[in-house]
Image (cartoon, rainbow, N blue to C red):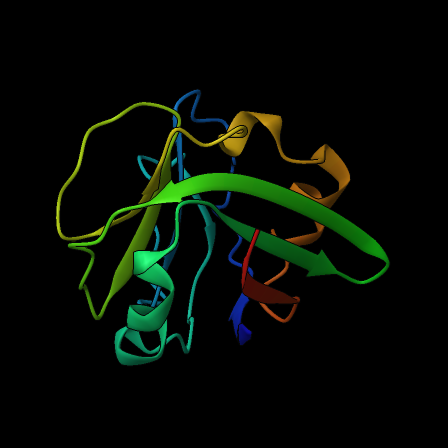
Length: 130
């Protein structure tokens, strides 16, 4: 089973955070949001719910011909309609989709991050059981 959604670039995307990355529904992004890798997302928290009972999930990011795969442990209490956060550590909040991830924003392919600085660039995101 998998769930696919999209997000888009923003001129202020930096992808430099060392412990998290984030995908948001909002289209505004300041330079303080160095963990955000995608904006204007169309994810639906209701469609994510069935995945939260799994022991391990993967999030596949696709931008043009580039692919990045992130493995993490889901947070069964995730339910946020405006942002989802994946963390290397174990901090949990309602906006934390996953913890114990194997990558943060800084680890994502730099070419992918550069492409996501274009507001018209689309990123396909696939959530699936590991």
